[in-house]
Length: 279
Image (cartoon, rainbow, N blue to C red; front, side):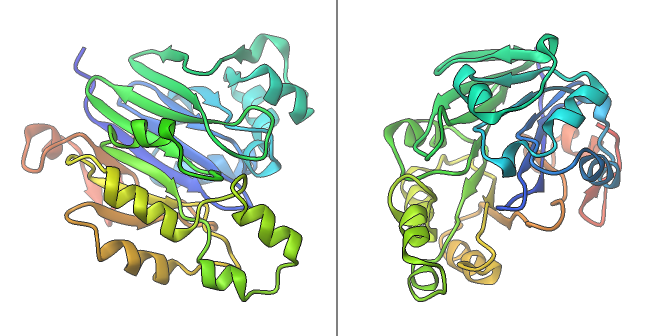
């Protein structure tokens, strides 16, 4: 089935809440639900995105900024939640049993014409996972909360047409900042988060020739600056559109997998960078 293109947006990205949308014209999934149900609804409405298209929520790990809005959102819309047993056990979530779906490492889950591949990542959580969402040949990766770059990550990143990639902190800002030593160690010690430099090395060494959009995600409020990381990546963009995902609002909806000038591109109406078609 031809299901191009995919539509993606970050509804919020940061230690105050994470939620990412990936879908086609018929169905969509959310990766994490770390902002309130109300705020999720408001931001999707502003983008012209319909909650009726959301057929599943995938949870990367149990930290509060990834599950804070999950219970209310899932119950209200009766959306199945895909979560590992270890993550569910450590989350203390009160989810109805009929809405819980277990997934396991290296499993690919089919949601309509979307295929979501789940693979383990390095982070200080029970069973943390990253995700690849594909529809036909188009692939979008969601790679945040990464203590280090591993072989699994590079394998999947180099297949992406678009990706959400963590660039959490600038090493100098973290080192010279006010955080206590134990917290600096937790962030940069190999089980916490990815620095701008580490993310840039992954991008420059392993990006696919068709990587059209890179959404830099989960920026630290105190140890990073959007202008700094945007400038750093733009120096090496080579045609990839670089976007900083905000910790305060949604990004525009980006269309992935459509070649410029194609008939499919002309069918997608945009206004001021936002999609006005309701996907």
